[in-house]
Image 1 (cartoon, rainbow, N blue to C red):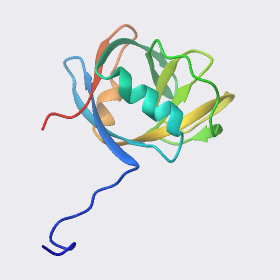
Image 2 (tube, one colour):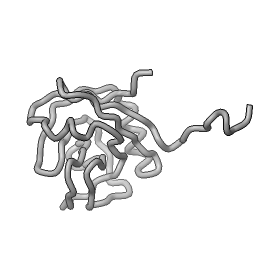
Image 3 (cartoon, rainbow, N blue to C red):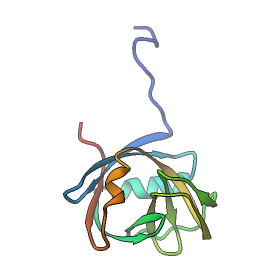
Length: 132
């Protein structure tokens, strides 16, 4: 079989789902090349449930991960996903933002970003590997 008939896939891109309690499901791509240690640690914790914290430009998911700063950035756009090492938070940006603290970029929301627009503090979300 030729390689054109069977796509090779990506070693770096890994898909996840975030179910936003009662609102819908977002599809998220995590990219190992952005922060390999962070992404691998995050993948090992899947699936996990979290209450959310809402800030003006982002929704944060609480995790128990303790990881250092890795390839940090401070500027993010709508749909970007990053990890805040100082708080152990997965941050989903629902608007453009500049952070005072360094965040490890880990991925992008591919679809369903609108579900995060109506999330409220304390809502429960579940991050998991996609259903096959």
